[in-house]
Image 1: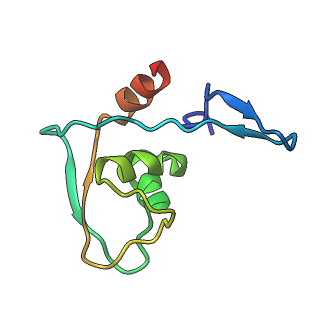
Image 2: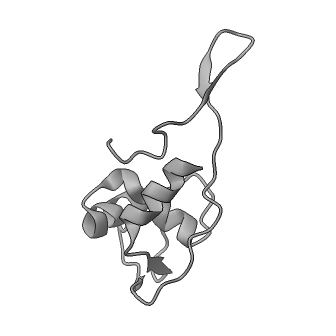
Length: 98
């Protein structure tokens, strides 16, 4: 997971001894003329779409953030229109600077 959103993420030790990642949310992914728009089909998932467009399934969070998807599921209803940002390397690098 070289491009994981957890890279360089701060951790926190809980009272019960567990160590957890602290939450970080990418603030916004601006629209670009280079973005691709798709309509989902049966069995489309955020991680498989990230693998298809970015060759890295761990970048699913870019598609989720760009489309204001905040629930815990990877599955998507058929016919959902999604924006697929194409400048994912810039997005990952900017996220690491936060």
